[in-house]
Amino acid sequence: MDSYETFLNPAAVADAARHVIPIRHDLHQNPELGFQEHYTHGVVARELTRLGVPFTGGLAGGTGLTALIRGAADGPCIALRADMDALPITENTGLPYASTRPGLMHACGHDGHTAVLLAVAAVLAPQAHRLPGTIKLIFQPSEEANNGAARMCEAGVLDNPRVQAIFGLHGWPGLKVGTACTRGGVLLAAVDSFEIIITGRGAHGAYPGDGVDPIVCAAALVQGLQTIASREISATEGCVVTVAAIHAGNAFNVIPESATLVGTLRTLLPATRAAVKEAVQRICAGTGAAHRCGIVCTFGEGTPSTVNTPEMAELTARAAVKILGQGRFFL
Image (cartoon, rainbow, N blue to C red; front, side, top):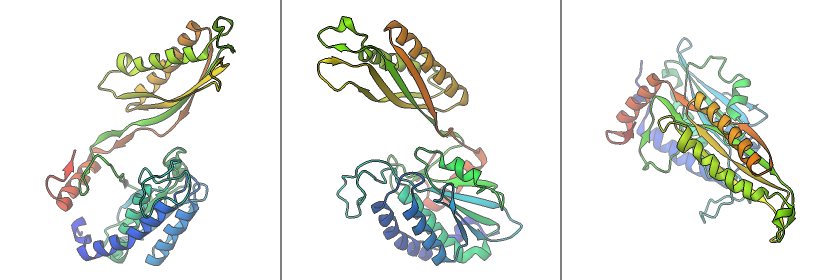
């Protein structure tokens, strides 16, 4: 069996990099939100066609794709995954390839992820006959908010042939260019959102005793929620509770009827995830009662924590050290 280093012909890698840089710039100029990545789908389909790599498009609502680079028929199937969606952020970078779509930006780097996977296809496709198994490429929509991974799994992308291991990457601003890191076990936190609607009674700002102020309740609630991470959850378990936005009122002299808080919960362990949600609900109920306000809290369930198989993390580490060199991989 050929080792992974033998597939990394420097000239082929350099050619693939040169080719995908303008593709990445094109994707960056044309960002799309989750399940709306129709332009990106077209770019990926065009490149896979050019490379002669068979693919299936239109998945997970219309914008997901999978492709197969077939080697030995009796070998394992290894999947490589890249996400494709952008964020609802206005770009002000001044780059020559900045977003041309107002209010949208590839701020999380998924344009780079897609380009990298296309480069991998360009390097491996001509060497398919040497592969000890099959490489499945997965281009996933909607990583940011709408559980595109689950939709792709429901579409059967892990079957036919059955995937035995899957690898993905994410650009990380905290790492220097040319370095990489991973570890076995929990790597990234589960992501959940929350919305808390506080209902009081409106009144003139000069007569607060005539009303029930939801803003005062909201202020107390923000403080109370911070005690979850600092006083209820062990520091070794990992927990973040962030109130990211508060909306209430629109006049300088009127106490509003209601206030709304939205934010995010990040947890590493399933038990912690459940405990944090229970604590949020409990603190909401107590704070609302203390301030004579009604409170309704709802959660948006996002992705679970990323848990790496130790064996695959070790395989990645060995490959990274051999390819990148000592001192350029971190656990």
